[in-house]
Image 1 (cartoon, rainbow over the protein chains, first blue to last red):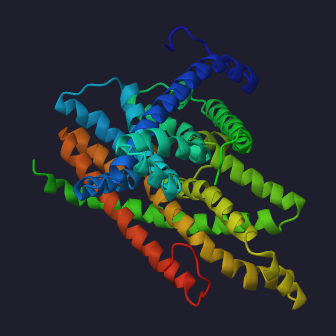
Image 2: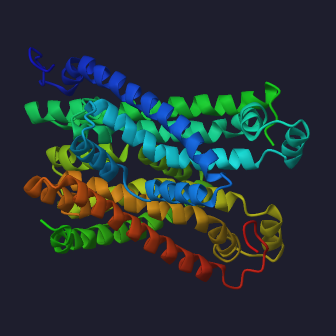
Image 3: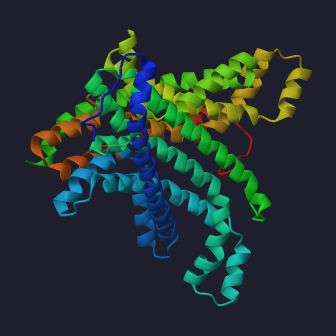
Length: 230
Length: 221
């Protein structure tokens, strides 16, 4: 995708303008990876949280161990593991999907703790009422517990989304051409790293500041929408 | 090839990882306290500088910071060897998060304590070092424990600026032998073990910090 592009490195300003279009293409990949990873983290994290609350000790202990293992090992090594080991078992995924899966797995361990906190914060009376109404365990979770837990955990989940956006550059080591991968590639061609790397840094800073401000507003808006926070 | 054959090389890498992690935790803690205290106690200018530090190092990715200091900074004439760069950047990154923890804990010290210190005619420094900090440090410990594990995990990124840490060793062995499954499994277990050891060490530090602390706290029986 880099062929046919000319970069004007005469001054930093012309250089910035000439690489901006490519970096912005990278930005869309970065955001896509973060959104895909976050979707995996949200769904898998819920599964982990529910499995961990299972009444069968074998299931809850195994899940606890898996979550702890995912939480205490580096994302980069997990990514290498998925990228190089899955194909040996015949599972060949595109690099982008492998990357999103690695992000999702690591953050599922984090989000499962958030879900667990949210579920435990639901009052005991709700469980008792569900039992009194003869709801099954599945129905209790689906219709009573999870809908009440979700509003409480929105801010914490938002923080993890922001953290995840900042970890997406790791995907460039398995050939995903997101923002950081493109910036280093441009640097390699022009031997001029300062401008592309600074530009990427600034875009990340802008992204996280916008996301944090958005989260702050969301946090303020939640109680107003009639959702009890405590 | 038997996987035990990789262990000597992985051990060498693990030593580098441990060194970098511990050094980054030490430097990062110093930065965290320095900028965290500035945020609370510094005047308008100093606390703004501290705010800029935390926002920049928390707001941009560690990956970008490492590459920036490794590739971009030498172009304007400032360069260190890779290990120093790795330790300093990692320390500055976690120091940014640590400064927020310090700030949060300092501002959660109850105002009555500060009033009492004032009534006893304590100077500002005495209040900070004898009243606020000893109480705040206890509050910081659980968050610092998590941050220490985070530092260990993030230290794997220094392999990308050619430092021969555990991840780098794993990568080079894989490139030689193509035996991905066992190498990466062993590497993950190594990191997991180091995390557990670090967690226990942080528990010991926490107990040391809590000595003589009589306040009942949540999560403590």
